[in-house]
Amino acid sequence: MVVNSNRVGLALGSFIALFHFVWSLVVALGWAQAVLDFIYSIHFLNNPFLIQEFSLGKALVLVCFTFVMGYIGGYVLSLVWNKVVSKR
Image 1 (tube, one colour):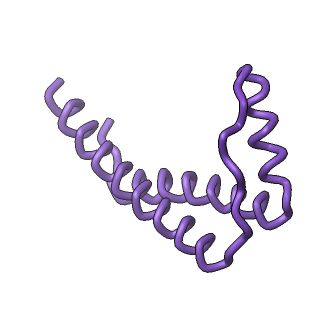
Image 2 (cartoon, rainbow, N blue to C red):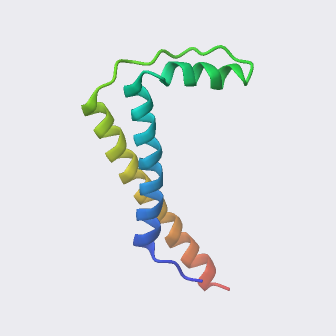
Image 3 (spheres, rainbow, N blue to C red):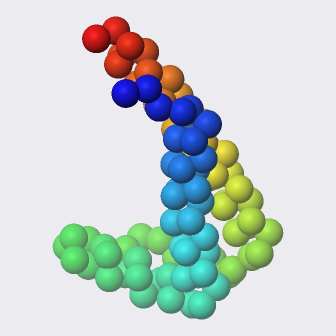
């Protein structure tokens, strides 16, 4: 099965960007430190990180950057997939 590289890139980029958009919302709502503290505690670890103050500019850069990196990763992954599948 050959996959469309553009669609795979858009799908992976969108998924990763959505995840980071939700994280940005969690930071904006002031819940991020509690989330990180909980995640570390259930792994029997101390949390060494402190959440910074929310910045809309940083949030936009985060979401856009992760979308672009996800798109590139999905695109490359689909190219490799199509090469492997066409060899069968």
